[in-house]
Length: 635
Image (cartoon, rainbow, N blue to C red; front, side, top):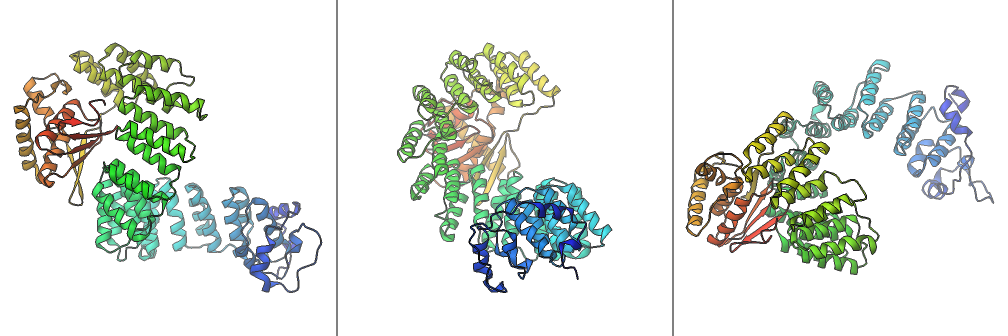
């Protein structure tokens, strides 16, 4: 039997550990003595010294009992335990301890130590190999993981078990290595591990992260026993893959299956509700939060505030915030962001002042929301004030985002020259967002000359962003400069750039309905188009004139009217009028900025139908009521 470290001449890494100085063990011994008192063969050695070394650990203590009883908090602490294990002469008989040390070294970021120790473990069992696979997986090192798997098979002839598969699949997911993941899947099928729920959950996650959501769905549907982890994984991969409607559908299926959601489910779903402005689903999740006892969780409450704010529920997110006993900085910031997005500049400033009064120190994110609120509300004087006090009073130096907000504020107010001067005086290099804010202002105020100059800068600094080309092309089209507009669009085509298609979303009947321009795919398509035509005819009778200048094609006026009347927002509003009860607000989300004609049409529709219509576009909220918009036509 091996009895000492001298029996391991190849343990050069262990030798280096032994040569290191003794480190104070005062942090280790109290917990060790309390939890393992029965393991001492005799009373602890008496000492008057306040310092302890590895020799003070009794040699009769089994190494496998030492590591669970102490939690090393640094590399040096880990090395103390390591050196004692070697000196105890019990290193070779307890592979478990070596595995724990490998994991601990890796935890503290010393992969070199972990690798050296792993290579010097004399009798590596499957647990040892799995420990190293787990280490590489946590670091996202797929190549090293695959090498370990190869060595397992070729050097020692070990097969994989459930832990091996669950450990390596996250590395495939992180690297988006679908081919490697499919090979692991094939092995799992061949060896019968696909009956293990944990393995299937890991496979679902891998396929989802690799973009193969259909494969993940097939695995999920075939599971005989779907755990909460299975449901959470499916919800998460749908949300992260952009299939937000699917995530919400899964949540509804969970409820029908009597699966109680946990914190992970709720946080993921609230983000999905925020993305699609699904207020009804947010309210259902709010009910789950109350029933599950998560109402005191500040992080969940903050996510709920954001979901309500992005779903148009101003009163709801205000109530959630005021139910918090001790809102933190993130919760206050969520409130600021909510009011800013809705264009409530004065309310945003009020919240800011309350936050400061509560003793919280505003940071750069806080001021970004305050300046954004001023921009959306046309509060030029207030915006300038807070831009100055952020550095003079609170010591927050302006960043690019703050300059972008100020350029947007000045530009929207028609102060284009002042906005340009601000850019030119910036102590930091302006980025595409800053120049893009000025280009947007040039579009609003039809300043083609300055717009052309700014666009050229953007084409050089950010040549792959199609939005800049579209804005300049739209400016040319609105001015009747069709040749210039065609030239810009041809440039887009040459560079392989495409405009994102506009689409609008509306929630109804536990489902999110999606519309694109002239959409005929909806089951109620005929009724929707008929309702829209009826609505447009009523609007014309009271003076509505389509703004055909927003049709960016050189075609006849009649054709322009036909094109603009079938925009996705209008179809979504018509659908909302068909399915929503009398007097119920209509909430719509648009992935792009609302066009001027749809903005004008929504005001008329709100007047004719005596209905509140809320549209959240890519920049802000528009609340239409009685023929007016909350933005004051300032967007």
